[in-house]
Each structure stands twice: as C-alpha cells, then as structure tokens.
Image (cartoon, rainbow, N blue to C red; front, side, top):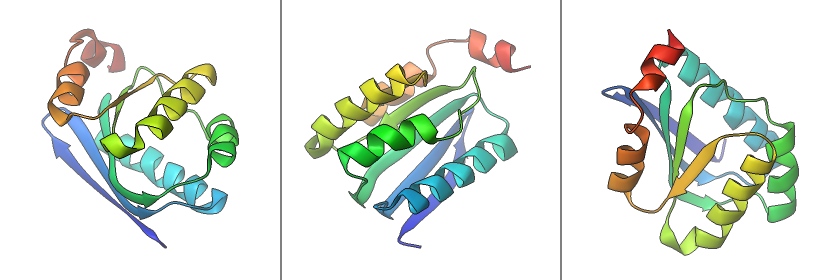
Length: 129
C-alpha cells in the first residue's frame, strides 16, 4: 500500500487524513472502501477529507471515471476536502466532476473555512437519525 489513511473524531466531524500516493485505480477503489467503512463505524454526518499529504494522484482521466464508478457516499453526508493550494486545478476538477456525478462535496484550501462550512448546517444531525 502506497498511501495511509488515518481517521479520528474531532467532535462531530470525522477527519480522514490521507497521505502518500494514490496513483492506480485499484488503490483508489480500495481507499474508497476503507473510507466508507470508517464513516459507517464513526456514525457521523460531517466528514473532512484532508488530502494535503497526498503526493501523487490519479491523472485527470482516471479521476473522471473513478468518481463515476466509485460507490456513492451516503447522503446526507456533508463532505469537505482540504487540499493544498498547489493542487488548486486538480481540486476544482475533482469538485466539478464529483458534482456532475451526483456527489455533494466542496473543496477548501484553509482548514478553518472547511470546518466552518462543515459545522454550518445544524439540520444534518437530525437528518441522520
């Protein structure tokens, strides 16, 4: 495995920290399965994906198809991706592609902004119960 996935609860937010290389479709599929399990085990509706430590990623073509093939992350999850500013182009592409595939996700470059957005809708907790 060329990547690591660390999960921890930060109040009512599940923080998933991904580091390393996610360069193959197989690794990306495995990562998604691990993420789905972590979310189910945590029982939360707010998830922060911190991918600032990902050093290599799927290329844009593979990302486009992977987002469409990946299992849907259950609604009413509120999902934020925390990305490094040097990957702004990739982050915009991912957010647009995910949105077009029906996944509700928002990308951020500042952790405080991502956390504020995640905590911004009190109705999410009620929707999950």
